[in-house]
Length: 145
Image 1 (cartoon, rainbow, N blue to C red):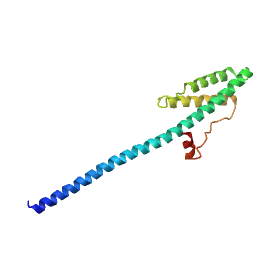
Image 2: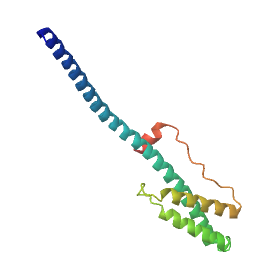
Image 3: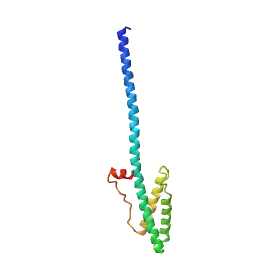
Image 4: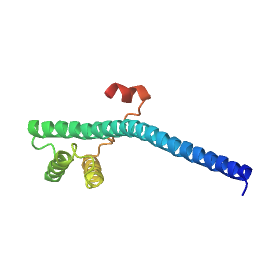
């Protein structure tokens, strides 16, 4: 192999090395930027979801407070069955793991609350349903933070 061929080979190896270094650096930078972006997105989704769950639980708690107050004022207003369902729903709302969003039972408990709510309103013959409040803008989520 002559010097010219060896020089061309060294230049080719150098080009491949520079390209590989650039690729690795770009990957590291992209990965770091992606982690930052992912954390921001996850925080925003977590805030929105947490707010919505809290709002729904608050709705149910408000209904329970009204029903409990009515029952105290007029003990004969609700049947024994309705009173029992109100107590069970109240226990479910209290058991909801608000401070542990990773609890595996979270969806199961919320579904039981919703079912119990439908049972109570159905027995009472009341058309009452939680509709939720749509988020009007990204600003609503930012205002919570």
